[in-house]
Length: 303
Image (tube, rainbow, N blue to C red; front, side, top):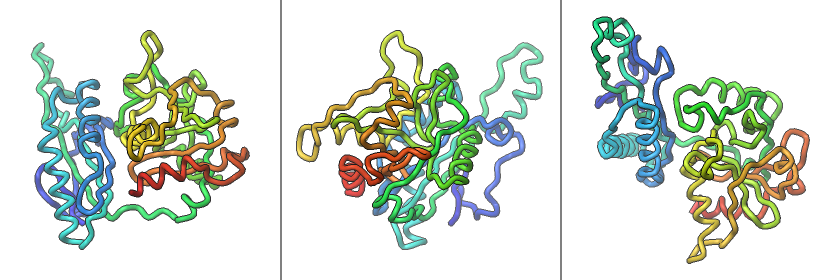
């Protein structure tokens, strides 16, 4: 399938960025991974709002034209559906710092302000990843990442291109038969998975770490990305109206002891939705079978 770069579709073998592009040279950029169902992108507005907030907070760009980005994403999904005959897809939107060659080559030598380059925008639409049914019916195992998330790193809770540590942790997890790696912070508190948000269930309550923007006044910042599927699960759990489960949701600092004493654990992201965890390394969770709340949340996501 063709890839959309800066307003034009190109063949995969021709999909290139410049040598001086900030994403290539320095990992300067952000991305969003989304799912489309029936030609519509799930939670598109939430994904673009998160992207815009990160771009502004991290000073990548003061303003992104999120409406135009949304139109471009939907246009690419429609083009994919027309070509493939399916409106179900995995969508990746990438925004990099653009060509940084001139600013980094001495644009400030005369004391002037560095020019702000145009971003590189790429959209790739492809068939959705098909995970084994057993992942969801039987649950998966996870490992504990050796690296630690740093809540004092201002980039930690944003979806930047600097994903090498996360990919490395995933590879290490896969090598020991695990589907994901849990990350703890430098203060030894639960943060997230390498590519997912983490939920614990204990005595009927849903427990999860603070995400960026949820921290208590005066508390240390969070290293946890505010996941879009995570937000949906919280709404489904807390809701008391039609379809809501009326479950108490508590955000707090969680330790490895909380993880090992949980009645259920499940993970969320845009690709797999809700994924039950039945083992943390050698520790069995919930009798080794997916819990009722994980199953209920997966049914809601599928719906």
